[in-house]
Length: 169
Image (tube, rainbow, N blue to C red; front, side, top):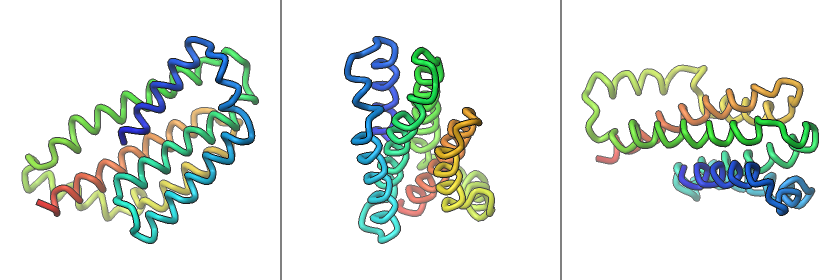
């Protein structure tokens, strides 16, 4: 999820520097682009036209754009969540990518069995996670809901990609 990490870091830098281009990210065009990329990522992922890693990255990066475009106008101009959430997203995604996904080839059989078990749990079902992310974008009164949904999404993405790498070796 390289694009997601980079977009989060870029958003945090733009927010910290109070960049004059930030209002473009809160306009209707940015919201439309985010919704379009989100829908295309889901559709192409469902139809198996894109690799899992690519459509996961496209979807969650698009939700970041939708989140910023729809939430930023509702909060104060200097709300710290628009700096700290992107930094948190970058950190957690980078950590799981470096520590788990890139090391999945070295997992022992017991770890692989645990991953497969977690993969089968319904609360870790990927479609539920996607719905959770989408619903969290709509509920602006609970500002911690979107970061929780993204965290679950990143963890579920990690399980799926690790198993794909293990099964592909």
